[in-house]
Image (cartoon, rainbow, N blue to C red; front, side, top):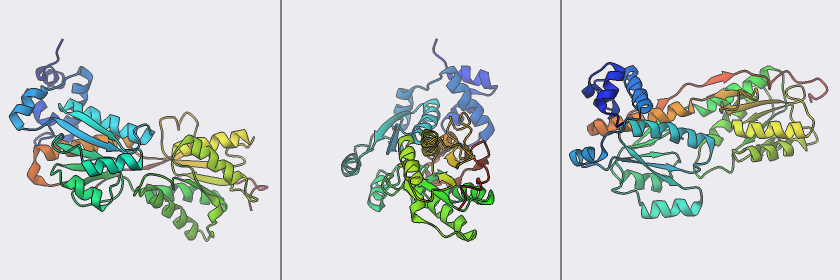
Length: 339
């Protein structure tokens, strides 16, 4: 049976007009009630009439989403959460996966998204020319990566502070040779690896530890890359007693490399990740948790709010909370391995 707006209203105990305002991001609805309505609409499978909405508003009822790697856990999680909010509000998603320099150049040269979407959620960091191209679309723009930039609603976290909490934990345990597995080869203009590296270096400096470039290895933000990077670090004459991996996926690869080398975690080497991947608790990984799905939902909600009130302008940057999750992969350094 077709689910109507009345069904959603009855499920949440509000009027149909309140449901309509909530799903379209309009004012006059509390955030708690809006969340309840969105959840109820998604559970019931309610989908507003796109044809009626488009005729009434002159809009396409479509949101464009631009991603560098749709298959990566972070981007996929953000996309899935955002799409559910858009769908509950009656919007389709038009996805552009720009995983190669050629695809990225072709997209920003031709801008095939023009006149096809009402708003854009960008999960990549554009250079100045690319940002200007997106602004030329004259639609609301949002992102969940990088810092503030003109014309964009930014929802994200403090990457540097998160990295600082991870490395400070290792230093406080007594580790002096702290390695880092980073994502130096990640997408163009992506600031996350740089911000997390600054956090790593800052804590070492505060602790009076001289940074050693040999203790940094590129893991490319993948499990396989993390395994290769950990193997490189283990090949050093004086390998690290602890490792900060800039993502949980790289941390999981590091755990696999340590297991392959018959080293115990955390007795021989401590490992800290970043993200709180859905499998992190399964493997007992100590990590910095960021609300990945919540960032996608919030960015989608803010885009819908801008569509409902176009004269309001883009909201100020939203910083989401992070938490340090202490689990089983960290401990003080073993005396025979500390240098």
